[in-house]
Image 1 (cartoon, rainbow, N blue to C red):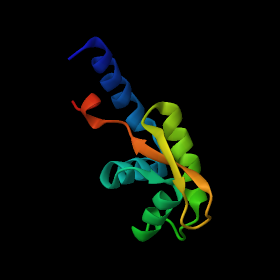
Image 2: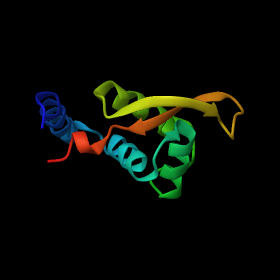
Image 3: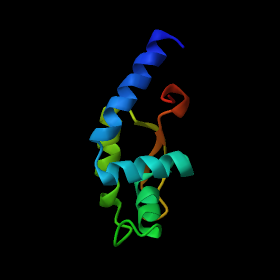
Image 4: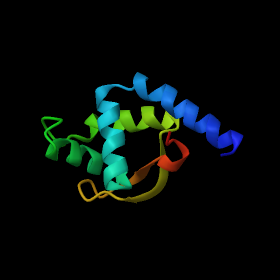
Amino acid sequence: MSITEENRRESYQAILPTLTERQKNVLQILQECGDLTAQETADELHRRGITPTDERNFAAPRLTELADTGLVAAVGKKICNKTGRKVTVWTAAKEENHDE
């Protein structure tokens, strides 16, 4: 393992305990479902019974926070089925860089 990969793994392990429950839920959904928009993530939070509605604001701020930590990244754009506007597509950081 390279020094860079080792540093990434250590950083990932240090960040995980500091995440809020909602941030953990959002990260897990991206890891399980693949690339999603904030609305699609909110839909999944609601489907799993984590949030009372599918309002995108249950997910969007958490995605921004997770991006600030490097755990998720914007990887593209697409048209939202709900609003008809261009929105960001998010992905979870590759787990192979973070496995113990």
